[in-house]
Length: 631
Image (cartoon, rainbow, N blue to C red):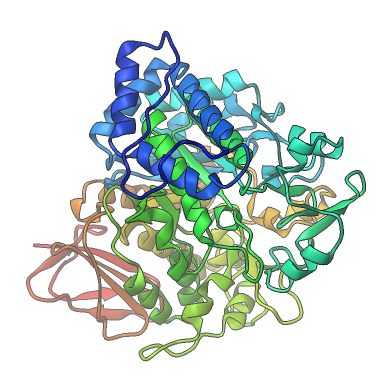
């Protein structure tokens, strides 16, 4: 039976069923939002995805009744936030926005510890805090929390759900939006749905991709990539209790959900709205490129993925419009813009600019910005009310494969050997300043690099050598990368500890629960002793002071609004990246080991990072940067 909804693009929305007794003002608000466009988008996408499936009408009715019920239970403070942001939907684009990403336990021990450190975040200028997975994970290995056992419970080691809600409220009162991960592609193998599937429940068996033998999995494997080729080869795992093969894109204990089942959509949409009701204002949609499977493809970036995202966005726009959706789609640049949406409707508000991040690291190793300039030139101008998330490091490895299209070169750029770049950051070259490690790379293949930004930039080596000059250069490299992230247009995000030049966590090698997972190298615990007295722990004080100064300058520059025009200028030197934002601001970034003189086009300029420097020509020191303002 098909739902009685109209799948034709542009159709008007079907009626929105609302529970009896709903506050009349809220009912009117929800109805107005629904009829403004999102209702028609949701009806169209749901029908196109699931209209041919048995039970689709029941799923549709369950979806709307659940969403309306959750809206009725949404905190009045969050309804007020929804109304405020509906009036200013570009609130997250202004140059005062700064993100910060960390694990709860690594940063504060638990939710109460994070609450106690809100003043630290405010001192940095943070207005968006992304707390990495904190929902209850499976016991034992759990992919750093990304193997979720229960979407409605938090990890008990971190506190309670009430602690989380209280933290969200405290952050909101401090002007900081809480972000969290919503793992959409898979659950842990001990999630209640998986447990029911193992017990023989056909409803929940249908929540996953389950095959009686290897015939179908082998056909898929012919075109599928390997995410963790060393530690979890293959994309399917045999489960003895099921006596079947389960799709496991990532680790064997992470079972891929079957999003072609409308019941999965309803269950995960309800999860999203419940999470939003707990005060989470930004949802990082984990691994969304993998949601839809199709034989003969790499099962990434399929058209249905975007239909799912349009449907989820429509739900958010009606029932929780104060919430942002952030795409975690680590894919080549050519595949990334569709995650913002288009003529068929909006999708995500934010997306990680992984190509920009990776190209910046490649340019730092090469001393040549050709690849970085190409990525920026190819970065499209986005529509209203959406933006890139720009960053230097995160909890994941630096995945070099995302740059494969750019690495082949072009008319203006030579090819780049990504294997050489990866080797540089793994410290395998005598001329390297980096202390990183390869991640999931074997047999000459290039996969990723692990390491904290400070050690990848050379701070660790400079400390061990006791070399002040090398230390100053390493600090400049770290701040250079953050300068690019702050100036190129987007929402820049700090990674935990970078503000005090925190280095690699070598202790993970001795931890049986972590040593098999190389990304723990760059997941250290925050060093609060260093943060309390940074000038006693060189170079923490220098990095912290200069980073805060950069954030303060950026906050006051309208030219650095995420939507301000961006142009890559001809620098006349391969080591320079010259970026114009509008007509009043030019960022000059030197990725090379020698000083370079740069003359801006016409007029006099002054350096916002050094008030004593102004004129018509500037010397940019090795790995230095100038933020130039006209006049």
